[in-house]
Length: 258
Ligand SMILES: [Fe+2]
Ligand SMILES: [Fe+2]
Image (tube, rainbow, N blue to C red):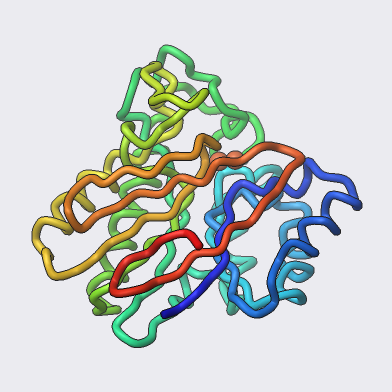
């Protein structure tokens, strides 16, 4: 049995010092912490990760907010040598692989052009700002496909029966909950990485002996869905100004909350 803490979308730039301290106090230094992105923003994420890491062993991927006021390549360069950046340093032991990819919505779920300014990414990330809607859409697709290629590389490199994928963006629209129900809005385009979903469904079917769990965030709506017998998606419920953490364990190839 292996226990770990998990959170996502803690948006530490939305909490005051007291709130930050409460979050740090809520962490258990006995168990490693995995974070599925949207930690804060580019101006402070390095300091935030240091502060969290000083409490407990930390592994993270970046979400869209973590690139705000900078560019995607620049922030990935910042963390290139950082041990706790999960995409570069998977946690692998005893036939368990805990791997990470940042991930991106690809605009192919819902109707991208119905709400072209749905998220602040298009203003606050250098790669997107000043670009046409079409150029944004192309970039989103590229980022999503890149995350799939990277995931494929990790899955080939780190063979294990129990695989946990930490990524920011949910891979299926069925996992996009809003107000406690599945979101059926066109806005889903900005919240789902359908390219990763297509890849994962096929991978799960092709590898029935493996148990796959995807732990993600971005939509802030809690959900747990089983896409195939061996592929589970867990989306963390999150609120601004109220970061929380949960304890999970891996037992007999399955991941469940404690
Ligand atoms: Fe978020
Ligand atoms: Fe996000």
